[in-house]
Image (cartoon, rainbow, N blue to C red; front, side, top):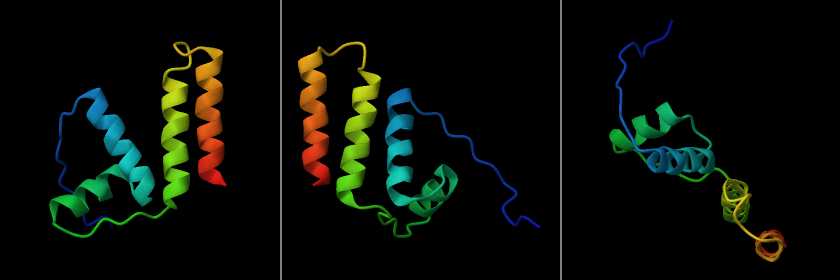
Amino acid sequence: MRSKTQGINVRVTPAEKEKLSESTFYCGLSLSEYLRRLGLGKNVRAATDEKIYKSFRLIRHLKKDLEAPEKSEILHRLCTIEELLK
């Protein structure tokens, strides 16, 4: 039986939601668990390597901007990701 029966609704901007989603990915937690731990003053620690997380963020930003940058900018970003993963 589920012990957590009370819900809390929180309104955020799209940018705030994206940042929270990235943070939950980095910590390996669901959004609910991440916010619960922060709200209760518990430690929230990274579950993934920093290089992988930075690469994930760069890929995510590249994907978001896919229609905007020119080919040279895309190549530059991919090279940055490649260097991070070395």
